[in-house]
Structure formats: C-alpha cells, structure tokens
Image (cartoon, rainbow, N blue to C red; front, side, top):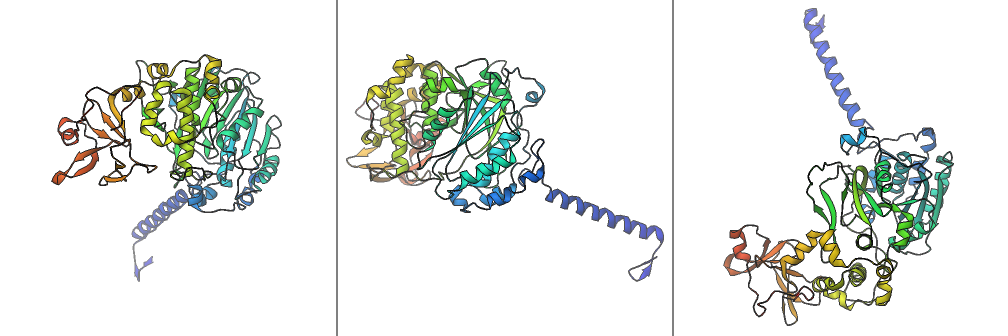
Length: 528
C-alpha cells in the first residue's frame, strides 16, 4: 500500500486507517452532543400527548410578533427564550422518593383546579412556555380551567387575541379545559388582576402562577394531597431558580423557608430539620414567595383575597401570609412539587407616578403597601417598621382604620404577638436583639452608606433611601440591613465593614449609646 509517497506494510496502514476512523467518530459524537436538543439550555420541542408536532409548528410565527427584543426591557434573555422553544426537558430536582411513592388523591370532581396567570408586557415565548409546560405536565382530569389576565400590556396589544386563536387550534382536543381570556383596559397591577381572575374561577382550588415559570413533572399531585387533608391550608411548590441570562434550570434548596424583616421585605431564611424529618417532607413557612401559591378558592375569598387596598405589586404575599396564619390557616412548602421560576434582578415594569416628589414611584408604592400591612396586622410592632422606614409616616392612606381591620374583626384573628411566638421566632429574635433602630442624625444631616463597601458620608436626612441603622443589644454594633457595620478604620476614620462575628472583629465596631441607659421600649424603638 502507498502512504505519504512510500509504500507501507498492510498492518501499518490498517493502524492509520483505524485511528483515523476513531478520530472521526469522536468528532461526530462531540458534534451531535453539542447540537442535541436534549440540552436543558437549548430545549426541546415535545409533542403534547396525542397532539401532532405539526400543531406546534406555527409557534415561531406566534412569537415573531413580539414587538420588543431588548433584554433590558424583559430583564431576561429574550433571544435565548425565543430559541429554546415551547417546552424543554427539565432536570429532575425533587428527591428520588417523590417519584416512587403514590400520593393519595381525592377524585377530580372534588379537587379540580383553576389556574390564574396574570401578565404585563411579558415576552410571547416566555408566556407560551409557561402555559405549555403547565398543560403538558398537569393531569387533564384535575385541570379544570386556565384564566389568563392581560394587565394592560402596552407594547403587545394583540397578544391576548393571538394567544386565544393559537390555543384554540393547538388544544382543541382538551374539551374539559375551560379557557378564560381577560384584558384590563389599563394597568391595574398584579394584585387586582389576580383577584379578578380568582373571582371568576369555578374550580375548588385556585393556583396563582407567574407568567415566567416552567412546571416540572408531577408538580400537582403532592400539592393536592396536602390540600385534601386541611381546607385552611395554602401550599407552595419548592421553586427551582431559572437564571435570567442563561435560562439554566437549577435545583432549589429544601433548607429554605420564606420570611421577612421589619422593613417588610421578603427574605429566604435557613431552616433546620426537626427530629425524624427528611428533606422531601412538606414543611411550614411563615411566608410564601409571591410567584406561586395554591389554596382552596373558598378559603381565599373568605380571607378577603389579596388585600384590595394594596397597589400594583409588592407586599401582597406577606400580607396574605400574615392574614392566613393569624386567622386560622397555615402555609406549607412541598418539596416533592417543583416549579421553575425566573427571579429577575430588578423590576421589568414601571410604577405609576405618585404624589411624593422625594420618593420614586417604586419606593412610594412599596411604602404605601407596607404601611397598610403595618397598620392592619403588626399592632404595637408597627413602630419598628416606622423606625426603619420613617418616610412611610407621610404616605397618605385612603382607608379608615376600621376598613383595614375588618377581616381581623370578622375572623377573630390572633394578635401579631402570636405570629412572632408561634410562626416566625426568627423575627422575634431579631426584635429582641436590637436596642435601637433608625437614623444616625446630627440636626438635618445623617450618616449614610451609599454602597456596601463605601466610605460613610453625611447626607440629608430627607433622602428617600437614607441608611437605617440597627444597634445590636449585646455587641453594641451598628448594622445596616445588609449586615455591614459602622467601624473605626485605619487612621481613626469611620468605615463600613462586614459585621464581625467574633470578639476581636467586633472590637472596632462597638459603639456606646449615651443618654439612653435603659433599653428601648418595644412599642417605641428609639432613633439613634
């Protein structure tokens, strides 16, 4: 045989040929792997049960009418969202025992579900993937109706009509499924839109689902099993985070529960497993993340729905959670139920203009809603909120005290002290750890930390975001809500440092409060 200008022995040439073929095979495998639609980032177009894949082919035409293609507008990767497709394979994120046990479910006639999805200026591909994943991975017998509420989308005014036509073609065989399409003529907000959808729902249970989610396999059955045992229970799946940039789907942690601080901001809190408790078991949570919640429709309406006095967005999940716990209900997170959710890094929508020029529309809306929660539910502990958010005192409310307290009176609800004692001891502990809260003030100038690692400055005390400080009773540290402490740095200059956890680290962060030898009263936290 001839090779490279020279003849070679047959056994040598055979070696070269075999090596060449192996290399080609390796390159082919790599190419196929990279091009595979099974990758959870690239996604996969799946047929919906008995429907033909051809019925999905016009989805590209549907999303081509998306009027806005800016990632900044949606606060997630719109181009990748369009490329992923309608539905994709998701990783199995729940515990292996969840797939082997058979949940005890009520009959579909006793446990049908209405799903309410409200959206405002959502990308077509993202909204469609939320809907298709829901319909593809939910037992038909239990999914009674889907209620879609367009909350006055401005950039895509034909979205709801186009969606109605598209779904009418693709899901025409789902004769049991009731579809309701609603559009607000102007922006009313998530809270009002969800209440509108729930008021028209006819299923026994109502699920509130954000419009940028993907439900995972077997998500519904564990929730139904828990609700069948307690009519006054609200359940939330464990939310798996979807990265807004890469759309990668990651496993959420079973060791987190929902909570909030005294500024009424939502936070994830670490939890500890009780004796004999395993990771896959449902567990109680003081608050749920606002994106996904399921409960009895009757119980939801008895509680007054989401508080109608709240504006647009913000605080509704905290308000409903406090109301639920104090008025005879409970909240559970169910790890065997998994739904993916995009947590945007900032709001992808505008808030309506407000009257206070010193506050941004988003800040005033947040303070308005938080003030309603404080006045409605926190009792004497509302003073802690006002100490941390003094600007809320000047926010006007259009409702009387009796109106805000109506549900508490009708349902004979517990005082907020009961919530701190039995539901959220972490919040109570934080309250007991503080000797004072508020601003560090010298006449009309206050100590302000613009960034977590910046040099503190003196700024006008009337800034809407002026730093609120908390003085820790035991250590004498002055801490921001981000757990950075005021310290004496190099050259005896005031600095901002991570709060020290040991005695030596705390030494440069210890402050003495003069003129107030007695601890601050619980019902009247003293400003620094």
